[in-house]
Image 1 (cartoon, helix red, strand yellow):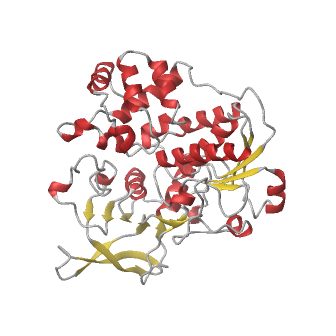
Image 2 (cartoon, one colour):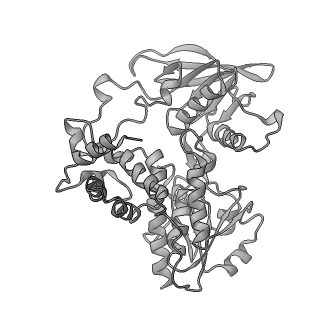
Image 3 (cartoon, helix red, strand yellow):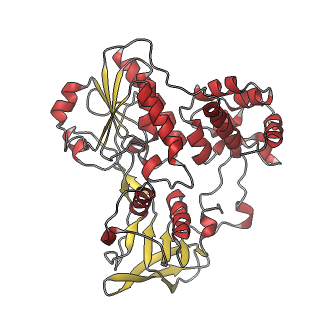
Length: 430
């Protein structure tokens, strides 16, 4: 948190530009950034919070996790450091919790309509809150034992403390949202019963099919998808029991993380905290040139440019492709990679020692399981759910939003899409 003096200084740096690039170019949610920063500079914190909530249901979550494209788009960043928008956003929200300003806001009336939201990540939670505040009966279904989706199971506690998520879920419950956990719709609950019970279905299941690397040795023990590791890590931190023979841990291990996105960064930081003996990050992209580490305004920085979690790896290998995994007695012991100084150079081969390999290569598309099949939902060329301009899928009264439509995206994009699909459902029900 910024000290009061530093916070005031940052708020006063905002120029309230005629064209607020931070808002119209940088923020997927269209947050009214100059407006609430101005309110902070005037000491009107309650008004700042109201402005923040007008476009973002969970600002203390985006204030922790957002990539902050608003800061890259800040006009000041042409020649100076940008306004610390993300930090101001976080402090507005946290002050709102401390002052007791954030409370359940139940609708003053009920429409009698029943809506099912399948999936409880940021898009699902945002959609559910907007819909219940419109007076509809809303039930969230999730196959996990607790709601939160990727916010609970994919992001470590050092990046998002789970009490910050739990208090928002308590707010949703106070507004009338029903939670149905441990339910796999289409498998545990028949689609016929589901469609008969609810007027509208909103699918926000995310993009959960991980991208794999198909090379010799892939089936060796010790090679795991990053999300499998992160989900288990979060379960263990939450006190859930994991059978000893199923534990994935970096403790004492030589770890290789393949991929340099957010999941890869979280894996590196988590393995460091597990007590890994060594961590190497392998990235297919070439190393950024010195003059590319700071992007041209208002573009976002490259994903592979240095970040705190990525810097916890001992070694970062750029422009490296996996040739094969090698092992000993059925378990991985190393990775043979091919690298080149530049695209025109001849490839050279080297071996990286590894007892644990985590594949953080992103996601291909939504899981096309019983829910998608039994609803006969059309998918696009990438395998994601196909929707029209009103967020409706190929099935009547079945809507979809978030990563199950977009593919892998950001938390702020998911929240924005959750709000937009809620608007579309309201128009449909009128």
